[in-house]
Image 1 (cartoon, one colour):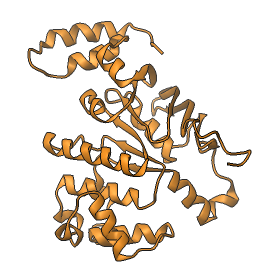
Image 2 (cartoon, one colour):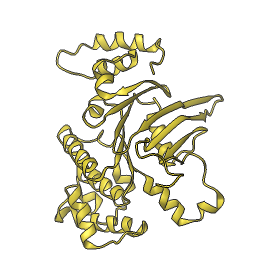
Image 3 (cartoon, helix red, strand yellow):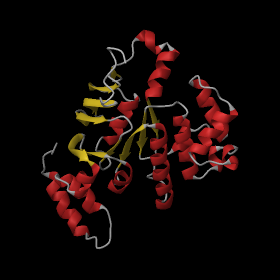
Image 4 (cartoon, one colour):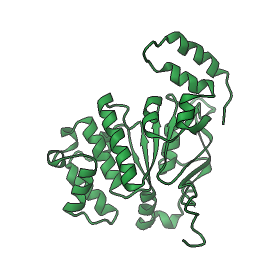
Length: 288
């Protein structure tokens, strides 16, 4: 470790006061993220939860660089990602690839991000070549095996795969880069419950095998309960509660967190509880 390297026990990802606003067509602005802060340890798993419009996906896109923040920082291993790259580095493929190897993203619908002309095997070989890794049959097969795709799926194009198989391929393509952090934005929202369980198990195994850290973005508290160590709850662009997942979901302190729990149908569920929880959440302040 050099003098410039962070201590080994320092957080891998540090998000500090990340802020993003959008101008509205009729005038005024909408704050999608308001000073959002959290950390992710090496090999850790953090969930960002909230309803549609809470700002969680905007935060995810700022993490990977798809959306530039108005303020705040995103650092990986102590190096700032949030600032815009210099004109020189933008034209250096090595610099762009280095940033890509820090964080990779898996979207809700991988179909739109997969080349329909390429088979699963060709997709992985392309990703490996792009990032300077040997695109050998052995390495490609290792990635396919890692996500549970067999010979038939390896020769199939995206439209020939099921939703769960496409999501496995998207995860394999992200892993081809050897990322330090994997951001999954509603990555299981469109899948059946049984397929969700398979993806959860797969991600847990990959995390144990590779040490990759996970940032799991979801509107579903049951999802983050299965896959995360820490949970960040967002409402209207702000973090209203955060902490260990077991505590946040088991003993929620903020009315909005209680609303999310009350809104999830379960045995003995009463919609009236969700209505009362909504009224309490609308008038509450953050608990951080």
